[in-house]
Image (tube, rainbow, N blue to C red; front, side):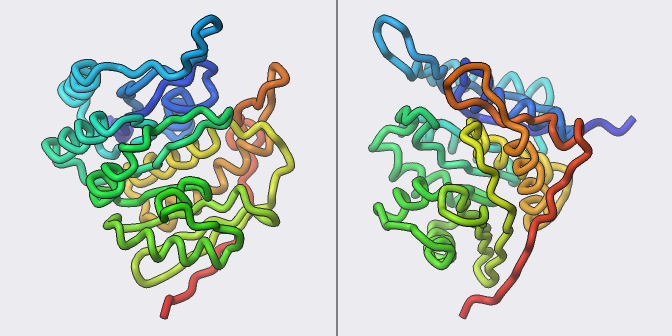
Length: 279
């Protein structure tokens, strides 16, 4: 029997089910990989204290990782919400000791409801210690801006330069996601020599909670299955675009993407891909 590839997510737990490890595991299931989750924090706003982020202990994180590695093992890994410098340093140590090679780093900083998901002193640790281990990093526009010392990013050309500059942090690939800009949804991939853009139609909806988590989880799944990075991004872009197109909400709060959409409706978006050499 051929068993599915194994993918681990190290991220926060979103109580509403739309983002974080919940979105990751739904994505892994849809893409036929075996998903495991290491919870770094629980995100859920307490009605009396208003506290929104409830971090897990380092011991709990280490215990989850050890259990997953001992019981299953791993072919690919993605990181999402890590929240603190201490957690980032712990995760870096775990990855290095386990000699994991396929790593997607989604530098989660701010949630859809403006929840602060990364402490200020953790940003430098992310840049200096975790990013250099990454196969690919997947910042959106606000995250890329923060990583570049609050540089404004307004155009596709800005994203291209951002990808080139972020590459200097040490990852093998950089994907800057342009979903928050105007016009078509264009993402920029850079590998040190070549810029590739992936363009999808903009879906007019507010129900995009978990879209970034889903995108990076899909990339991790395809990489674990042996796809080259550019192809993994292409397939993942189509997957998340279809999921966004069929997003919905049960309340007046921003709702989730629909992870089952590509399979349920048999749809795959035609993603326009352009490649050019950087001078």
